[in-house]
Image (tube, rainbow, N blue to C red; front, top):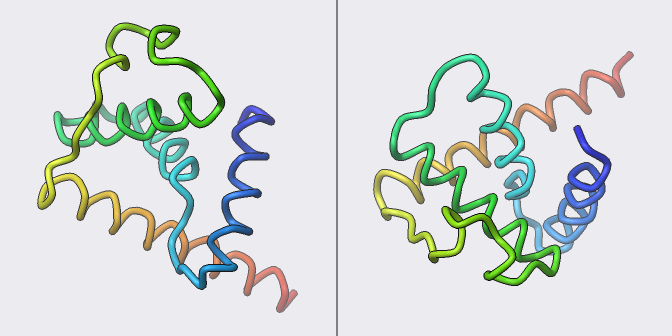
Length: 108
């Protein structure tokens, strides 16, 4: 994982902790989808979610829309049922898995 993404995930985890959110960060979800796409092709909805998260991440780094690749310049809107809920479920699942990992490391 590139250091820039790892650092962003750590910062956003701290922010979510202060808000008492029990979700993984959006960069974590972006990275997970990226690596999952190496094992199986993404369908249309997961591709749209990945592009949405990637665009949001790149803009958060200070990139201007005109500096983005052409497929990320247009604003991406997630479908409420098929994409927003899937993203929320993924972030909840990732948070649970990371929490389980931390608990198991503390026990040993």
